[in-house]
Image (cartoon, rainbow, N blue to C red; front, side, top):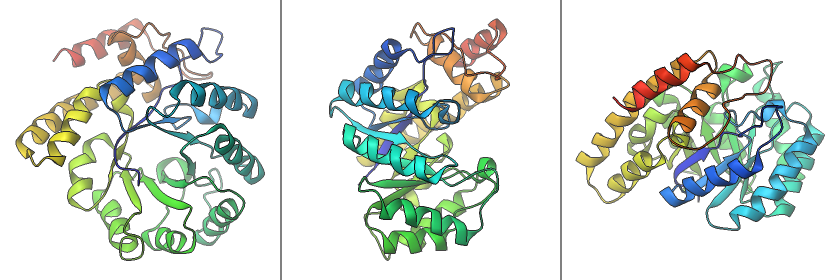
Length: 293
């Protein structure tokens, strides 16, 4: 089961836009040392949509060797080409990844029937555990609790979901729909602020961007909740609520998170793949003020 605090890692880049594997290693090492339960390569914050298949394959091969079982390693293999998604998922499996995180097809905003057909085809042609990725604000369609339950009941390899919906009741309804069928199905929230709400609803935790910045805060919140020290868990959740302002410090939340990681001490460029607006000195100053508040 996938449970706890998971980080959808930023993808550090060089100034020319190529992947900076050396600093990526350092960042992931820091996350592991902080006690994160797992790391996702090529999620939304990891700019999965902006890299070629070849770039992803090289990074997956490199990072699976580097992580070497020290934490769970998830790989975002989603895209708009079903054959490429299947091939990349199988490649991640061959490299030793623990799971694939696959976003629903975007641009056309598929119907429930099309989404079910899509995920069924992937599950039937791969062996790696799959976490569905529901992000309707970006894909134009929602993976409903009923659809998730059908897929979970049909395919053992579909083991969980990242539910990035700014509505706690949506995630709760997924838990209530799926757990009578699959108690081991992992329901992770995609919003940093929803850890406690997720857990009291029967969910397994979060897979969220701000964990790149202060993984220790999230790990402390999770461990406090696990041992029943709810006062400490709430204290850490209050810190998380303050950190959420970082997302608004830049035109693109990805560059805001990269700026925050840089302010915290990792010597990275805050470059995001073009044509993104890049983080400015003002962005870094605003992020620093939030982190110090």
